[in-house]
Length: 508
Image (cartoon, rainbow, N blue to C red; front, side):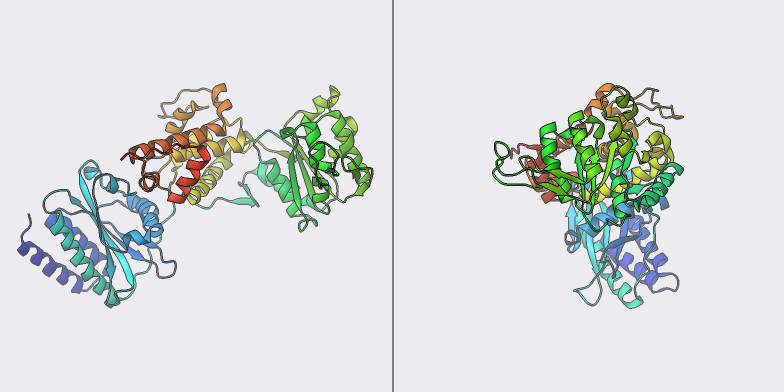
């Protein structure tokens, strides 16, 4: 145990250091290094409050490399900013509670039992917090004494910073850069996606029908929405309907509406989507899955601009622009007489081809980072990716296109470790393999398994449910602790418990 003389000597030397000439941050950094030299206190970190955003940024962490410092600012700095109240007072965390913090630690202390200590830094105005001092203390008899030492040092630093003025915020390069947006909701800068956007702008001002073609999961509805948003109809409604998701009778009702008593259960008149979209745009997805009878009724509306509700003889006039989409080989369906030829020519006035991910692989990094940013915002976390992981994503086949990539990123996010996604682990979880072997990846060359295709998005929900059940089990059924382990809020946890029907058994 350090003697009182050691503490006195430390503060004498720290006072001399801070009182000398030179860069303020460099002098504080030396004082933090002295903590390790004198007392074996590890990984001291100084966070400074940004007076504009009221967030905390890591300014000094002398035991971390520049790369680790940047990552720590993203993960731990963001965590502190989101949970300010936890750091308004001094705190000491042991064991699992300390391990749950998104700390970046030097490699030589990763497996040691250390207590985490944090203390607010305030100046003469006790109500205004300037920053936070944190450190790791060996979990032994001298913990309390060293915690008192850090508390006194935090007070000394508070008065020093108060007397010397604010510190300019350190700027870090984010691990997740803002992805390029080609058009609203459309991410990428490839030649293929730029051509699509040019076509959207050119056809948007027309009144003609648009037929969007492309594989499933390529974002055909996004294209339709942008056509509407760039047209003169942008202030009117945009209404969409997936024709393959409902039966023919229900489809007719959805589109044309019905009168009271038209069928059993029709207790009141109801407008259809054609009426709801009057003056705007109606998007019909998976039009190739419809029956010939429905196609005949749709053709009439396209040609005449009128229809009747189910159970009514009154003709209703509408002004609606039709945008259709399909992933089927529509020409083949026409030859097989499964799709009306006259409707095909009526719809195919302005065709747009939505490119697959195989045609725009250079956009995969941008899409991956975009989905990661969305997940970070949803879960209140800071998970990043690295260039080598992004390169692996580019080597994979994506038969499900953008939708499949989004699901894969969600899976990788859920099983992340150390604040970074691991493509190899996510591949193992989804039974995927590298499509074109990467040097040193250790992954075999295979395509996507049929079983993996069948799982799709449901696999994400299954894994999320398992993660919640495991966190609840390890937390003894205490939801506050489980939410902390998962890195989400209590409200988010309770929403997911209800969504997945998770049974909570509290262990007494």
